[in-house]
Length: 123
Image (cartoon, rainbow, N blue to C red):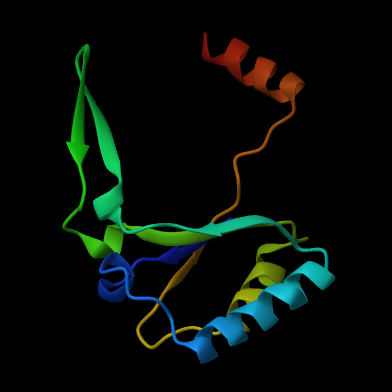
């Protein structure tokens, strides 16, 4: 999973320039042609979202916006690649604004059999 970190601009709802849109569209087309991208979306600012926190049996809902921009994400993509090195190589080609950040994290993925084994070992 490739995570685009939020910035002050994305949190303020500032849209990218036409040039930035065009560069990102070209990059996304390259990913699609290579068969790498499985899914992806941009996210609205955290002011449009909520957080739900569990405290004992209670669920506490907090409306956005959320203060710590560095902990927020502005969008994500699910990629299918052979290795972390391949993901890094593709991510380095991504057109990015100054001071922006991408995080790459493997998905937690196990077969039903592997999950059963993990659960039985945890008992």
